[in-house]
Length: 141
Image 1 (tube, rainbow, N blue to C red):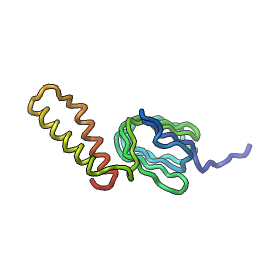
Image 2: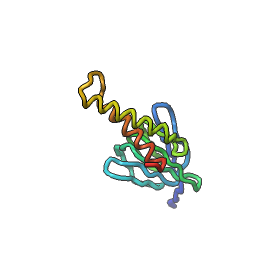
Image 3: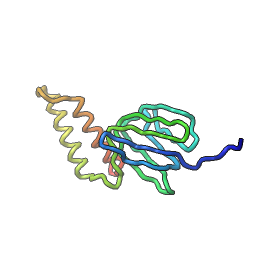
Image 4: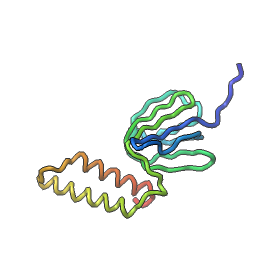
């Protein structure tokens, strides 16, 4: 039986709102909890936790960069699935809006530190991380 060499693999980058990317890819680089994970076709099976960060997809000779939230990554044979809580293409990031979101989150954290009731610190910290991630992925960090 002759072995064929795949040059692409099927990739789904999915958020709760729906797919951010669906199609054939040449490579993906995801922000693993312990560091970046690069995957090419015919990669060994893998399941990994992802942290918020930059996800890069190479498809059709072009790189597309996403600011992604935390989630999970699975690859088996020539099929990869990335499940994250959010994904935004780098070119679609409104840096001024992201900076405003970060400032608002920092102000809320200061109120929580001052003992103000009703502020969910964990939720606010996640908002801040998401805003800072968008700024970094847009190259403005």
